[in-house]
Image (cartoon, rainbow, N blue to C red):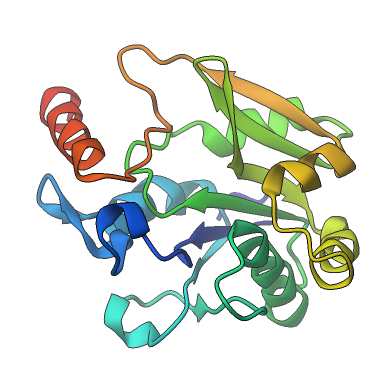
Length: 203
């Protein structure tokens, strides 16, 4: 337990179209499933961890709670964040922050939470960045944002993560991309091959 009252939410609710469909999180990379690599990186940094995914939760074979999107038709990562807020309200009232990460980022940095928390300050959220580019799906969010997100999704029909970050205000926290980008995400077979090479070279 970190003592920072953070609930980690691994987002795996997408359709993985660029990977040919199916569960991208279950794809093997360097001998381990993507989801297992993400859990290994993230679990020591948070106080509890859940997986946001749709469909039969048993297919993951995990001890973690698996929480579906609260909205139909695969509306995107904001629905996963809302699922995290709703899970915290019902099952983890101690949580003060939600940490979201993608299920397809096997190289997450070990200081992800520490740096986001340290640099967030009084902002409502802090998001990761690298190579001059923000990664708004990877962020630390105050649970007090839940009503605003619910209104954005349910009342306005907004689905873009950047629309939410622009509205609530965020701090961007940058990581170096050498010797590798810790936020490499696996969207295509080529990305998977790149991750295989990186893991083989850096361990």
